[in-house]
Image (tube, rainbow, N blue to C red; front, side, top):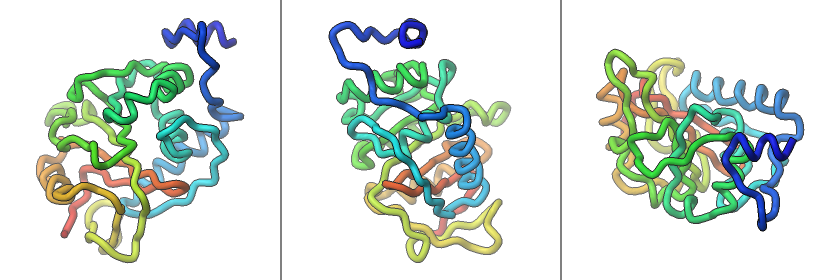
Length: 211
C-alpha cells in the first residue's frame, strides 16, 4: 500500500522517515469532518468544536490537517505560506496523504493553507473565479490563535438569522477591509475556513462584514 500511494503522490521516501499518520479510519473520519465543514460554511461565524486525535507535522494543527485530509486530492492545487512551505515534513505529509500538487503561483491554487496569518497574502492575490464560473475560486484554510463568537465584527447574510458576532485572533491589520472588498465582488471571491487548535469556523464570500 505504501508503495502504491508513494508512486501516485510523487513522493520519494528513500532516505527519509514515513510521513505522519493520517486518519485512522479515512472514510468515516473524512465524512465526519466534511459534515463539520459543511455546517460551518452553512452558518458563517458559528464556531464548531472538533475532537481530533492526529499526529500532524509542524506547523499544522489537527483541525487544519483534518480539513486538508478531507478536502484535498489530486485535482486541488495547493499553495502554502512561506513558513509552511519551508517545513519539508509538511509537504511530504500532504503529498503522501492527499496527493495534491503544491504550487508556487498563488493564482493557480484551488486551496491554500496559511499556518501563520502574518504571512497571509492579500485576498485578491488568490483565484476569485469568474461571474460565469464562480466555483473556480480558492478556499483558504487559515490558522488563528483563537476563535470567539462573543465579540468582534458583525456578520450578516445567508445562513445567519439576524447577525453573528465573530472574532479570529491573530489576523493581520486591514484583514476585515479586504473581506469587505472580497464580498463586494460576489459571486466572485474566496471562501475562508478558520482553524484554531480544536475549533473551526467559516466565512464564505456571500457573508457581509460590518467592522
